[in-house]
Length: 294
View (tube, rainbow, N blue to C red):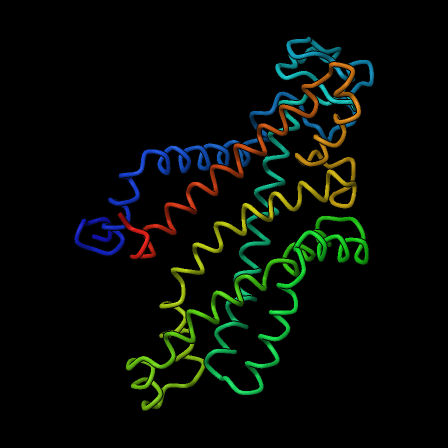
């Protein structure tokens, strides 16, 4: 049984459960994920359906009953959308962006970093110089340039997020693979008829995954924050998409007039999501790094 306490996974699970903060954050992330998946079924209003929206309901206070019969628990935004429904769909968009950018960035960065460490020579020099050059620029700056060049849209935004963050995975994978490539099991594998591809992906990659998993949790949260920042600046998703960053941006001009809920509630949802993912990532990092264990 993989959940047995004497197995590596069992020990990891037992140590993870010892941290009440990490367990609570993990449950929050799971709850948000479930709510985001079920958003079309539990949201009182479909924010994409223009027929259910009315400008007469724009900027209504929390608790107002709209013209369509909806009870707007968190109020409405400037377009007359039920804010609770828009936040549920916004969480859906944030998780989709973060997970896609993190997964694809992990695949690209890990492949480049491990190949650079395993092959060495000119391949290592070229790949790592490109990675080091990219790491010298802030991710937000690179994402802004890419979004400006590629234009608005979901595909373009995901591409910009991947390009802005894959270098972190490449640098981490390179460091882990460099430490592993000189070990006896790699030398023994090189002495067998196994192909180089099989050695890299069957033997080297699994031993490089622990630090990559830690970086992945951090980068998923960073991707969510970066997408929200770009949408807030009007360079992310189109204005019709109820992303959390766009909801915060739409309500910002009305903060001084007392209509705080349009920006504050999506901001709370964004903070809770990012902080919860980071807390889970911190605990995973502590468990996978023996020097950080208590």
